[in-house]
Image 1 (cartoon, rainbow, N blue to C red):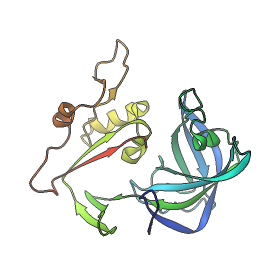
Image 2: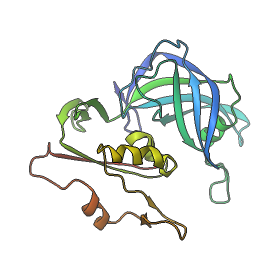
Image 3: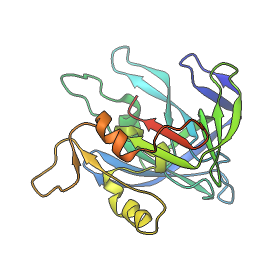
Image 4: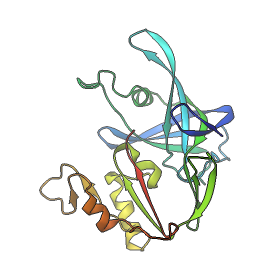
Amino acid sequence: MQVNPDGRLIRKLKEPLQISLLGKEELATDTFVYRFELPDIQKTLGHSTCQYLEFEAEILNRETKQKEKFMRYYHPMSKVIDAGYVDLLIKIYLRNFKHPTGGLFSQYIDQMTEGSTLKITGIGGDIEYLGHSNFLIRNKETQQMEKKRFKNVGMIAGGSGITPMFQYDIILDEDLTEYEKIGKLYYFPIVQAPDENWQLGSGKITSGMIESFMPPKSNNYQQSLNLLSRQR
């Protein structure tokens, strides 16, 4: 494992993994699920739940008119046990007056055609879920992953930071509602600009909401773990 200049803990692959686009599914006007085929359709990626992947592509710089190497990080939406493919839930950030270039990498992926390829160069993350309430969590001082067990886990996910939690957003509302019905989680969606028919949370997340819905603090640190993931 190595720590990138931006502080990310990354395990570089010995050889980049070249994946090819199989197709995409539209979930919202600017949000899609892209399915990529792995080189070996019998194998999985080998990452753990909550880990992200490091992607590399050569993208044309509109100012210099030269292709440059860009790196981006995405959490797969597909399960770690899925073999032969990987699904990425990506929001496309288009150019606008505030952001003249938009999201170069997301636009690049959106313009890919079936059969086009992308490289996976590493696997990383500060947290890995091992199952049965067990986690590996990065110690920021030693940079080592330490095993911990928690009884309750709370998750706040917003924007494009949704995928590490369960690769979910309001667009996957039905899936989360089903999990809630069988007692696996308590799910409370919040939208910033709801219409008149919206009955649940609205606006921005407040300290009162966190106190009401998230697992409480405990003297025993292994009782509760609260996670925050958001757009970076």
